[in-house]
Length: 69
Image 1 (cartoon, one colour):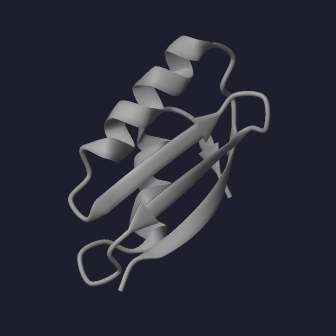
Image 2 (cartoon, helix red, strand yellow):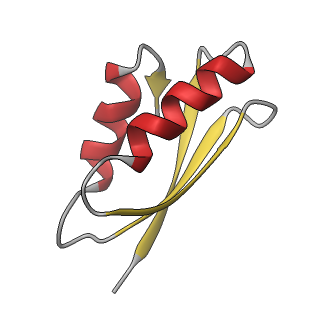
């Protein structure tokens, strides 16, 4: 069963940030959908909890240089 997590992302300043973060999350195993909003400062990620955890997704965001909460 798929789940969705909403991650607050601080530090994005441009569409390049959105593109980089979308790419990083999209290529994470277990992720089924990604919607990153610069205006809202958030990433909505659909994922398979059997393959990846919400905490692991926050780590991906932080590894891209942003603050995730």
